[in-house]
Length: 274
Image (cartoon, rainbow, N blue to C red; front, side, top):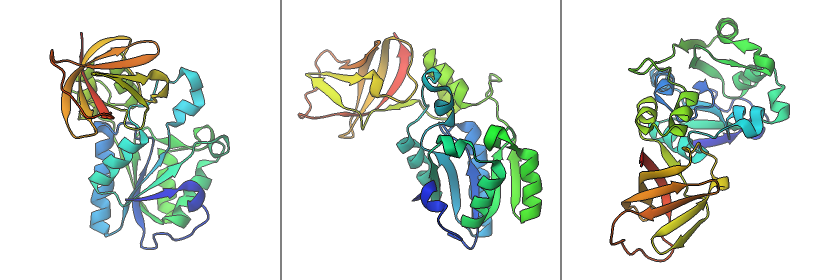
């Protein structure tokens, strides 16, 4: 999958002259609600014989807007990109949600996309809005699609079996409350904490991870049963102690397995609170 940076994109024209099928959003998860949108894009791309792409952000725009009040992402950028590539997307455009970008009007944003990646199909959620002070919504996109000659779909929101609206906010709340079963239902797969690029201190059978280095949402302080996916490919049962400053991960077995020096954790799957 090709990665295109916004600052590079705006210097070009007709990157995909045959046209492209895209969606736009934060896609933090990505969760089951996103799957309906992404499936529509992939289906349109296959039908039209054009590349499928995602327009998204390095980090959630919400994290920039509310600062320290933001509780964390559901997934890391690396996790999201891996998911898009596995689904069959041809390219992802990455945007740094800077102060300057936040002031861009929606009409200008879409004019750039039409000139550069030649939108032929666009799918977004039914509550989608973008641009300075959210000046462009679904109604505006319907008019723009008619004027500029591309197909547009607004995908209705999805609800869980418990009538919970599937959203990144709902998933963050579930993880914070240690309701990992609900988080899994909303995501469509288990909640994973990606720690592959975070410095880990290991002493014997215990790994220590600085909480401040983690950008994802974390459950409240406490002790949890979890599975540790090691960078060697092994999966072992562990206990995770979440404190104000650290995640301390210890092997659950009475006789810990002996690993080679430098063995690190790739990701953690929380299972339940002890």
